[in-house]
Image (tube, rainbow, N blue to C red):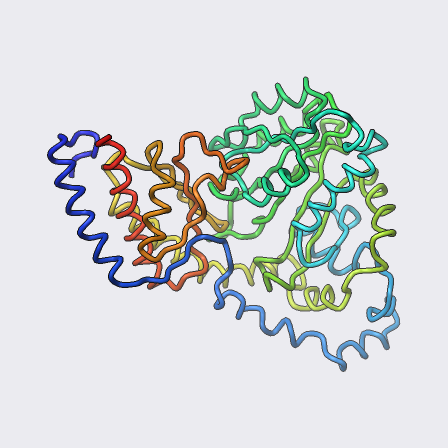
Amino acid sequence: MKAFKELSKVEAQEQLAMLMEEYGQFKAKELKLNMSRGKPAPEQLDLSMSLLDTVSSETTAEILKEGTADDLRNYGGLVGLPETRKLMAEIMDVDADDVIVCGNSSLNVMYDMVSQAFSHGVAGQTAWAKLGEPVKFLCPVPGYDRHFALTEYFGIEMIPVPLTADGPDMNIVEDYVNADASVKGIWCVPKYSNPTGTTYSDDVIRRFAALSPAAKDFRIYWDNAYAVHDFEQPGESLLNLKAACSEADNENLWYMFASTSKITFAGSGISALASSPDNLAEIRGRLSLQTIGPDKLNQLRHALFLRDLDGVRAHMQKHADIVAPKFETVLRVLDKGLNGLDIGEWTQPKGGYFISFIGLPNTAKRVVSLAKDAGMMLTGAGATYPYGNDAEDSNIRLAPTYPLIEELEDASKLFVLCVKIASLETLLK
């Protein structure tokens, strides 16, 4: 088939008419499909059901008899169990002493870090709320919509930075960070980025570590959400940010976040924060006022269930056996339906939870609308950009994990159809 841009007006109109007829047939099916959020499928959650059996009244009693730790049923253990600190440190590629194990949500921890910066400042610097000028964050795009929503909630000015195949455009990052003291942070999903699946290159990470921020309280907010979410072993490698910052004599430059939300139970996992000794000392001082201790029994469950990094990898291979074929289904349908038409391109990630689709300018909102009217929910057009503003109106995030694989076949075909219709409509204007 010809590329759509090569069609005559008559050919394009005829093609659109046929596609609209096919679209009507999809609408008649009254489908209920959803590729809008990166949720684990029930089959993935089932993989962790025995987590609930690891801690019982009997096992807890045995652990208490050993007398080697504080009573897990009581207050205390502010930074987490030694076992879970070690486990999360292995996932995050840091040392156990660098880690504080928190509640079930890393997003909650990120929110808290930004909130504390506003109310009390970072590293002895003026609280952001008292600066009397806008606070700015750099936001690689397309990126994670919840990072952007959190940032917007606090009234932080968001500056988009293009995300290249190697990571954020570091020329832009360096220009802002090294010259503008109002730039206080940058959001990063460094491995299998949401939504592109990009893994940052070694050079990009070394340039991050070598930054010379104009603001003493600038920090890299390193959300390594997909550190172990590989489709195949070995997965893509990620240079150690902590080591790179230490080598660059910038050891306080980073905060790192991770969780087991897409490893065990999405709503009942554990999260962790890692950073330098100086940063952790400041964080622990605040944490002692916020809580008298975390849920240590849930931490114990995870330590007994996952055990170590080898146990995590073995568990994540079971996830990959479920998730990878779903991605393969979507990518196969995209390739068969759109290849050669010159109306879109898409990422082919080797891990993570998303596929990023870039269509023709001024088509994304129309695609999402068409899909919705035919019974399929997609992430809102523009969601992967600060303020929901994709200037090109071209990016759509696809989330293949939750639907059944047979549903994904229909969903992907419907998506392809909507892309074709929106593209022809745009080209005919």
